[in-house]
Length: 459
Ligand SMILES: Nc1ncnc2c1ncn2[C@@H]1O[C@H](COP(=O)(O)OP(=O)(O)OP(=O)(O)O)[C@@H](O)[C@H]1O
Ligand SMILES: [Mg+2]
Image (cartoon, rainbow, N blue to C red; front, side, top):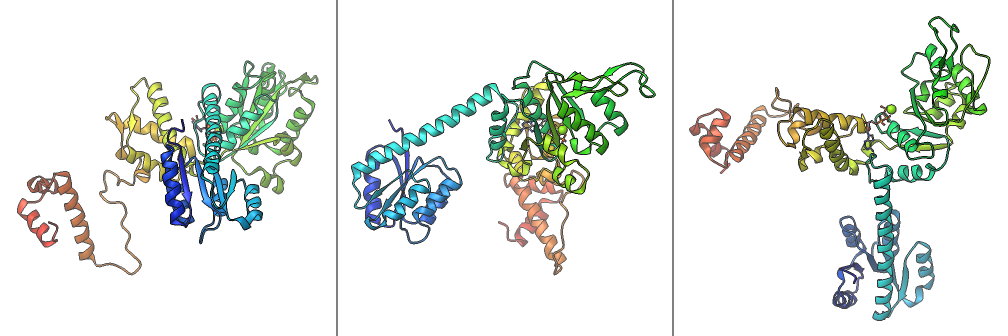
């Protein structure tokens, strides 16, 4: 029934460790037991358990410390504490810290068994719920927004909450973190999904044109206004307007925007009549708007009106766990767009992607993968298909990454000898230790190679 539910025991008494391990193993559990809290923490960094049963008093890291660690890291397991008679107070504290339950010494195995079974059932229910919720979300909602990391979870949670509302949303995040993607997802999963989503990049339109783009104009209201034209707000009526790069909006327009938002009506440039509006506003910026407000570049009242529900998108470097998922997602998406069979990616290449800082965030990663797909002749993307700053592989025309002379200088002959040995070793490895082949890779005589191998004692 408990198909190999796992338990971690922590107790410094070896007798109790041994007997509990034996008893629970006999019940069909997977049991591991350690004597010290430190060992438990190191196990917990690598594996997960359904239940932890720990002695409260341990010489170093205590049972409470373990419990705190579990809670702080939201590990999906329940903690049962074993306490001595005298420590009822500590047990109460433990329950407050979120322990599943506690049991007093001397241990009654039957009682502990019931507790463990209950704790496991609860852990599993929680895990199952989480899984189901993620499944649902994946299927019906944000399935094009990839991410499973702790850093992105609050974004999903908040998006989920506001789907059935008309709240004004402000999306904040560095360039390329997915602000527009999130804005679209909010619209297309929300109440207004059958109505227009109109995006306007306030930073890309010259200030003098922005006003008429947003609010529309009447024929003849300025040179070039040859016909009446509705603005983006009118086009977005009943739907959503996405004001991208809102931080760049000129001050005098901010005032007009604020009025439109407050009155929910718009006046075209050159017109005297108003049009009633029903528009949801989502805006985005990579700028620190609060700071702009402090500097006087952004109206405080407008800031508060736009920032009803803020959503912070984390930079990619804060969610490196998502990189393998994103890599697979982009391979599938880009290959499908190019009508090519979907390529794979090697572990080494994924690791290199995980080791990079991604100043351009997800957009930069998408470009890197697209370039790799376009350039490779293989069915699998590998290190050499990635840019050198990511792969760490030297550029084609230079054999070595830039070498650095250490502060204290170096011995040139010694350094060259080191390089020579590295290259010989690689040539031998590549040639399955066949010297003639290695020599030809290095463009030297076999005898020269043999001499060098001997001199460096590399056999
Ligand atoms: N979590 C994600 N999952 C899948 N694709 C993503 C994700 N985040 C971003 N992208 C993709 O990365 C690219 C950049 O995203 P988007 O244009 O939404 O970013 P942005 O924050 O608006 O960037 P900028 O500030 O440069 O305008 C898009 O192609 C988008 O589809
Ligand atoms: Mg954008």
